[in-house]
Length: 125
Image (cartoon, rainbow, N blue to C red; front, top):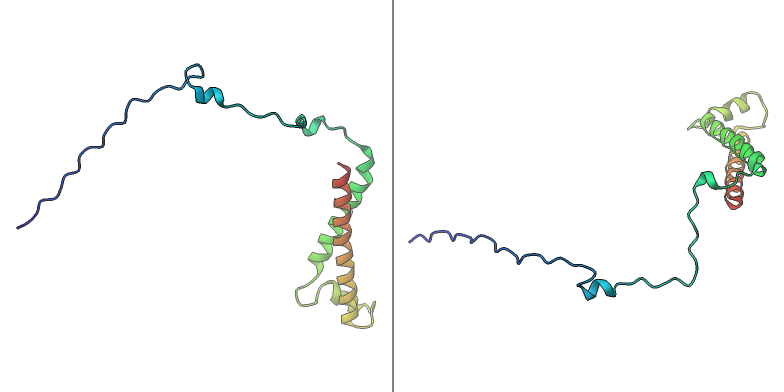
């Protein structure tokens, strides 16, 4: 004999929702935020901060270092060609490994100086 499938009964309706008013609910009245032991700083917008002209030369130096490091990195080839090859052809250095080493040191110095300048500028703000 085949058993007929059970029919599901419709979901029961929940009781009518009650409104929570601050005057009628003791729970809502009991919510209070503790006061902080220190005052919160007032939010300042970036345009409200005073502009200092002392950071101008540092910003310019950081921009020049960033452009120089990007250019030097882009001019380096993936297999040692590019700037290293041209330095080796002009006999600026004795060998290609010396030229590559010099270019690597200059690149590392530029990136390091960019990081230092960024840290100094961040500390001044």
